[in-house]
Length: 317
Image (cartoon, rainbow, N blue to C red; front, side, top):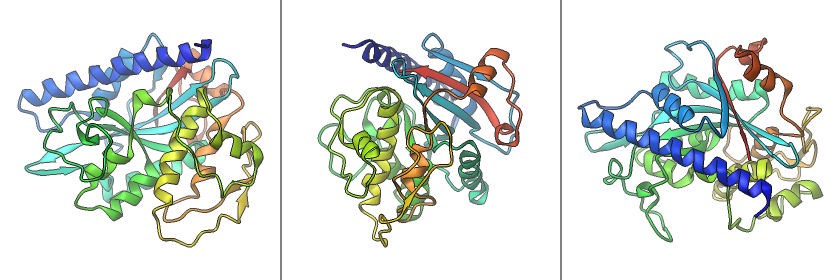
């Protein structure tokens, strides 16, 4: 096993601790008669549990209207020093009577719009961290799609999962009555992001750039692996969308430190943004200086793009 693989396994073990801490908290909280739990508290417990392998800094408390908050996460490749950033907002899986729900429409949908716009300013993809409780909590939530093993909604690692926000918006319109199950089926457990042993074949027919095609068709690790995993989720669902294909249009990223600056398909299907540029803009040649400065000074960076951040976190993979 290479040093990079060992580093990724260490981060994964830490994320397992974090997910376990969140599961323990949600289980105890519900056992005391509460209906749901605080997303902010769950995030605090997650970060405290992974502290040895992941550096983080929490900024001043965010406004109450910004439920779930925004955290900027960076995965840094310990070998190449490339970094992949993503803007994360927490969402709870809630049960009301016999109905399961994840509230992507909070504040009349303005929260989702704000998350996407904030990710545009920061030039990283936007994702939801789904806090789903433990497997016992989810035992009545059933997914009717095909599974090779354990049903996704009952999966023991699904307690803290990651879902691209653009896909959440798409599922929100497609599955209004089965949104919770559809979300868990599409999401990936947080602890699985830095490790992906069996990377499936990736249809790269829409990609003209050789470097981007290499990212998709060859086995990856580190920051590129995390980026590929998120992109795979979006491309899989894009293939199911009946929309006009515009993959002949190629875009360029206006970012000096972007790993891939050109040859990115502008096809968007029914997503809010073209998904290739949205995800791959987060893959940088190195960790942005403002992240290191924030971790050292424990202060929010200057600039309007940072004003709503609840904190930053960095993991070496």
